[in-house]
Length: 90
Image (cartoon, rainbow, N blue to C red; front, side, top):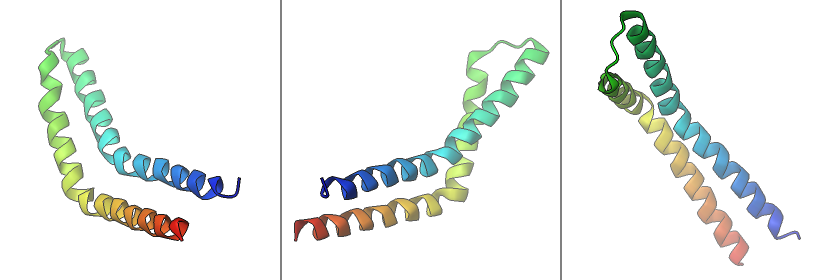
């Protein structure tokens, strides 16, 4: 039972890292989609492809602004995983 605790802690941290990495992109896409949806509703323009380009631009902007910090977060997590694998293997 003691061997499972580090694995569960690792799985919990993995879920948090995944949420922290995905959240900026998802929130930006959600916000842009909501704004474009409101504009479409106000102007009665029902074009389904109209939201694609603004969402793509927002996603690219978020990745440019936060990409380095997101990758460092993933890299630190990967180093911790490999360190724990080495520690468990001893």
